[in-house]
Amino acid sequence: MVSLTAWNKKDIKSIIDSGKFDTEFYLKENPDVKKSGLDPIIHYVLYGVHENRNPNDNFNTEIYYNLYKNVIGKNENPFAHYIRNNDHLFFFEKGLLQEYSYVSITNALNRLKKYPFFNEEDYVRMNSDVSSASMPTARHALLYGIGEGREIFSKRSIVRFLGNECKHDVNYKITDKVYGKNFPKTIGVFYHSEGNSFIQELAECLSDYLCDAGLNAKVLTEKTPEEETPELCIFCAPHEFFFLDGNEIWKRDEIIRKSIMFNTEQPQTLWFTRGILYILMSAGVMDLCYQNLKSFSDVGLPVFHFDPPVKSNRPLWAALIMRPACAVYSRVSSSMATVRGAG
Image 1 (cartoon, rainbow, N blue to C red):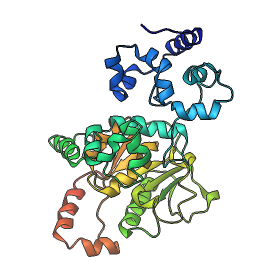
Image 2 (cartoon, helix red, strand yellow):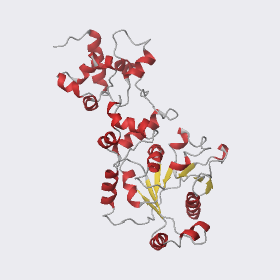
Image 3 (cartoon, helix red, strand yellow):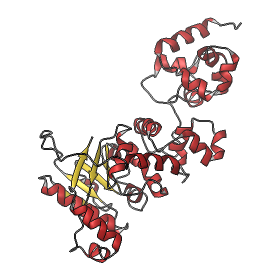
Image 4 (cartoon, rainbow, N blue to C red):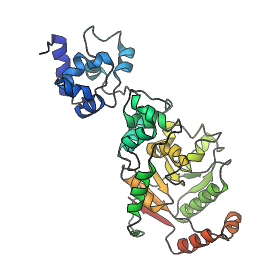
């Protein structure tokens, strides 16, 4: 039988009324609580708060207390104080993503949790030291794992998902539906000038097709002056663009969350993994691989399939098209639509 003070009862009522305490999360992160027999909220108020345990995935008890310890009542619970005074704000660790907003990080985290290539048990299995980390697995993967170059996605999950998608025929049509007149006035298709020349070709091809569709698009690079920022940015190969020098202007939170990312990497590579952060924080994603689209649409991202045609008059394609694999790709591409939208 536990004894509750007047402050405890007041705090418990505030927490219950708020609906912000995540019982499932608290029990998952603190399996010992279930054995105690105490209600999770009561446990948090009496004991968890003093052990820096967290009431949900978006509130860090220790961070909040250190910021507001001078105004929190002597016996007042920090989370209850937050609910009564600052519940419109975020208080959680940003890890290696200090330059990005709480909103963008939260969006990326929620998407990562639903992303079919990510499995918490696989992440811990591939990174055994994570089991002792003082934060939820998915949050660790987003805030630290990607930036530290860890393996985030298991090959098993990727193969299982894409293998299942490959069983289905490509089944969609170019629509004649009119989506409205609120198109962006300017579109910039970015590639990094120090990156792979193949990416430049993709950017030029995509820009050409956008222009053919009546949109005002042009190819830009990391050297484009900030004052020439287009209304819509499309970043080709985010795993490359945001890791080579000179991208500081375009790596900002306010740019990323309104942009479309054009993924050109295969999911099983570490290159793909380091670019996933920008995809998860973005407004939408394009991909060369049709089967990969569902993995992004499953997390709520608008998705687009771009299937560029092979043009032998381009120098790079002229050299590559003689290779057997490219010759096969050329024949397949010529029989498919060039720009496709899904979702």
